[in-house]
Length: 250
Length: 203
Image (cartoon, rainbow over all chains, first blue to last red; front, side, top):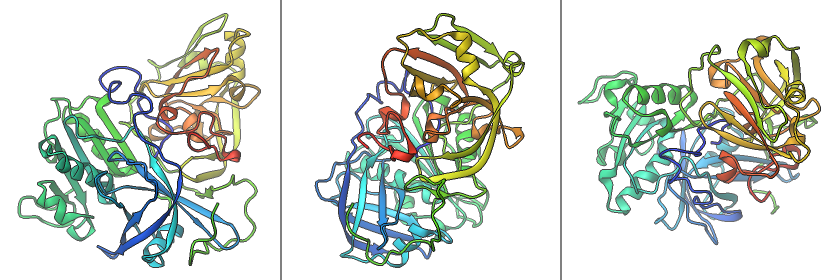
């Protein structure tokens, strides 16, 4: 999600990556819902057919706008989990308590429904499988990183992408099987794993970052703060850390 | 605008709060943090604020010099492009009007680029930071501004979407033309007026 502050790509190593206008952006479309699944009790996986789609870069998001009969609208932003090669746009939505939009998407939305969407949006938290990247995601914060992981595989460059995925329990981690199968380090704070006892994410969970990969951190505000600080302690240059803090916006 | 979304009725709505711009909702006592970078640790004693570019008198203030100026407070609402608004909140600092009066903009100055210690930039029409519309703020509801909200000091331009209120601001450069800043190069609107719902490029 956009923020009121980020490091500008005015100089230094990232300027070449962030040429103005490089990230695609699309306008409003009426998408058709092709699939709705509930991989965990708290999440809905929605796959959309977006007409006249502008292909996204992994890390970008879409805005979903719902309209009530009286014209009232509610819009929320959701990261895309699918890679650009996927003909459908895949969103993974966490059902928030009292979530006005997420509740609707999780409980009411059905295949065949239409949804107003706008995207792709965002040009900072993006990766095109063109340079080494290390990604650290917490909970649904793994969603845009899953798009990056899949894109790296599509491009035949999986070695460029290293991922750390954190959650409370295995069952709370979206795409857990896929991430584990792809070699992501799985960090669970409330469940032991064969290779790692339960515990919050720590410095030992991150690879050495002194070689200067782009670091992508995504999750709740608290997780993002902790993980981005760890990344700097693990040797990342502050200017190479890109953070997406998921806000509680229902 | 197309027709209604099947099965969507939205939250129970009484009277819509007239303070909420279109597409915004009231976040209540919350204040989401959405910064997209590592939160910096700024030492106030090393921080300075500069107004330069198309001004007669480029000026740099230290933390202590800034705090010795007449203080000014904003009481009102703030609006984030991610659709939350925070109503009836307050910030303290100094009005940009006094700082601009010292720096004396040249007649051709019409836009401004704000820069943060983190190299974040955002562009604004000069008119949007004049006449009591913008502050350099260091307190929120009577307490020191916390790091994640831009502390020790941030720009405050509350009548525009909040990404324009650059956290950890350190410089304003006056220009005779508009130039996109960080988010503006990344798909967001050049001006960002919440009442006109100027969220993205092209709105």
